[in-house]
Image (cartoon, rainbow, N blue to C red; front, side, top):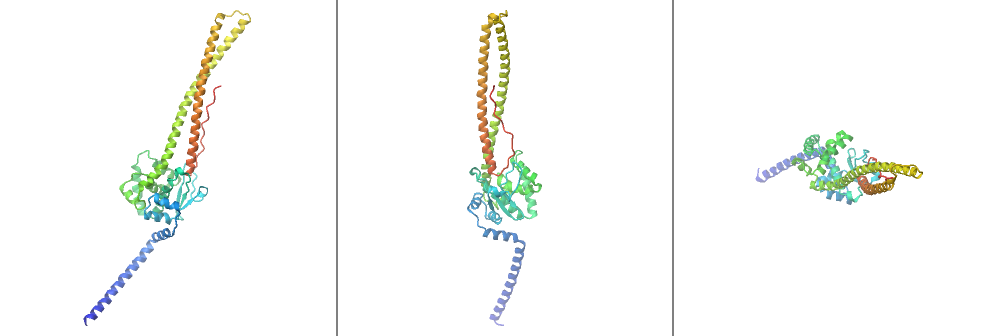
Length: 350
């Protein structure tokens, strides 16, 4: 056998080994594709999805990573006007604002169209929130269980007065199974400080999580400031009402006593004019002057009360204006409010 023949056979052998290796790779590829159909489908759908300008802004403002963008777009997100939103994401509890939902059966995201300019910062936050629901839907049960432990630990580490406790309680009251999935999306978009393991996890989907948290805080601060101002006025009105009520009680008592004293005086004067010998008639002028002085003091009391009532009612008008503004803000984030008993104006003293 010459050298050329040996080389040729070696080449044939090498080709055979390569063919076997290629067949193995193809078999592995088929197996991987079968077990990762959702991964392939998500990227195919996301690649074909054409986002409008608003959605592109959400992705940018929420600083979604390429993977986060895939899960958002693979969910075929739709921004829905207020009048149609309940067809997709319905929830009737008063005081609960629903701005988006991820529908498991459809694997689709629906987002409420926030039209109040003061609240627009919430839109990319909700987009990121719902994107995380889509990501959660793709996790294995083992991944969910591990994340659930981390999330519960992170929640327990928050201060006892942190609003997240109330937030998650509201979700649980509506659906007890929603605790961990909602905690996953809420903690990722609204809690500033998280354990390193969670921060590393969320970085897969959100490049700058603090930017998203800041957007959420910007909107919540608006409500907090309105709420603080409303509460300050309510407390002020309550204090003023107590003062006015006390002054009115004193005024009414003084007026009743003065009225009785005037009646006695007038009766005595009438009897004196009829010729009856009335004791102390020589002091009628002094008594009259005293009654007139008391009338003037009572009138001053009334003026003071009326002035306080005017101030009270002006403050009440301010409260009603703030309440109207707060109602607009709540409606802007799709919150259905309970009807509250209003505070009435203080009446003028008669």
